[in-house]
Length: 346
Image (cartoon, rainbow, N blue to C red; front, side, top):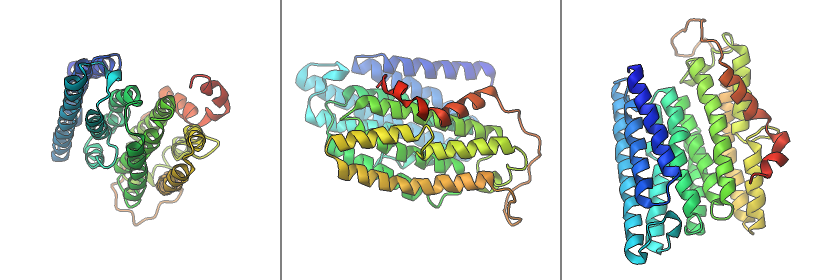
């Protein structure tokens, strides 16, 4: 892909995201989402591999269906209430259809099946965009319409997401698929709290994006996409592998890392809302995903790989670690001590 084409697609992604997050009218929000979808498709399919083409096709069909549902819910609400404002979504059927549309856009269970397949067929940098930037516009719409949505439905979908994200990630060997199920699991944490404390959802999303960006950029630097090749990275880049270990533990939500902060705040808020059983259930289900984070972390820092691993030997030369990875790793692991400062913004 030529640099000019990359520039056009990247600019379109930024434009589409900006249009959606700054709009008050449903039509402009929908137009921004469409620009985003059309801009990411060439980035998914740029390798021309059959799996990449398949991933781009699946992504297009899912996003087109979700956009049609979103437009349908907006038109239904406008038909009954005369309102095109995003925050004025009041018709119950329109709210239900919108919940389905945003769940499909985000990859929230039970509309999550497309996400691991699309991520597996994409390059690591595009997979990073799909996991973070592409989820920002629908997350903004979820934030803006949260007072209108059904909290019970969102709670059930959130618990299902956390359960499926944990269970389905257990037996994976492809790192991109593991991170896709990790994303589905994290979306459950964001969805369960959005009706009660929407700002916590955004905080969780920002921190999740930060930590996931660190993991993807590290994997991109060491050119790894399978567990079997991850086992051989310690001998080449021990410092980077150690940082990957810490970042994965942060992504799992273990103290004293950054990833513990949103989980702690969400459990605290759910308890305040007399939802202790839901908080207990989602906490226990996140232990499933903790298993595959620990598996990834173990593979990243294992010093003597087994000689039976079925993988191609790589050259020892790797790209120098960028300062962006150093900064991202620091923020991904060390923000918990300044949590009182972060809480002033929530």
